Length: 473
Image 1 (spheres, helix red, strand yellow):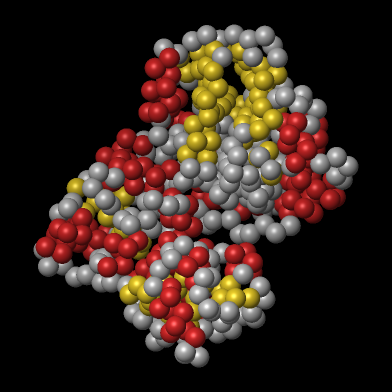
Image 2: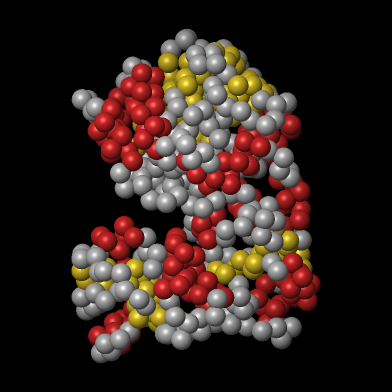
């Protein structure tokens, strides 16, 4: 029997490949189906089932394309109502593959249909559980996401169900059962996940706050619902896409998105389609020269989640600027979170654009040490800290104003176009995103601080743990 975790770091998402005696199962596949087909072909195995732990919010699943290509049966847990052909299993139903089997455990709480898949090996021994977003390493799934789709299903109600699921379905299993969760640290589907992506259930019973002995349901509900931040705006859209289906194939999305466009054709598409230009190059390359109106979201960081957080229309036409050879990667990662309307990429990149004499913009960069000298000698510097609110509250520079990137769309009214703003984040990635958005919206006087808070914290600028009252900027 084989169990392989297929982990995608940029989404902090884990899919799984299981195999026994020539038959395979895929659990929670991403949009692209080829890696799963290739893995089965490598072993000479046939994919029998595609198991979905729930309707995902943070990515678009590839189960339908994979089922068409492999002939496998899509399986959801009890109460799921997909708008396409799939097997909705009963609680306790057994799915055999090769000489092993999966037991479907209905574990509602993160969502109503959430299910955990218990793997029994060839000897009939409980080997592992694939928990999706029910149980993470060090955490449990957040119970507030369904309310974004169905307002009457409250977080408290789902948290109550989650407590029962954990107590009645998960906790009674043996301590040596291996826990394979759907996500790791960095995912917005939980609050405080561990960087580890697997553990034994016994160890989780010892260290996971949500599984501790003596925890009452009332305590659990309070702790699980406390401190939840607003989820990324694309989450409910992805849920509906996963429920309804009817999406273009990944092959069609990639074909359209990887169309090479000359500078003239690129400019024409941008004007005719009112397309958003997403520049995915390295941040220092972007600030030196970019197309006016382009938004920076670098491919080498949390690209897809930031696109999903900041680009509010999933049908928005998108044009791509990418490093040569990475165009398909960009389009694929856009499609993973439901952005299927990429129209092509700039052939030859910024070098070709500049060679054609097209307009170019830039953003001023400043070293942290130089900014510190300037800041300490000037009273009225407008310093925007674009880190998350929790980071700001943990520690920030005296006089800085919290302007979190994840809420930039709702906070635009608090900044003034005529002001000069200096921006920083933790390390320099998010501040360039924020600066590019402000630039695109008519803010010309912007300075990006290189190295972010990491570098600024080493300067003489005073730091404070006190949260300053909200002020006009």
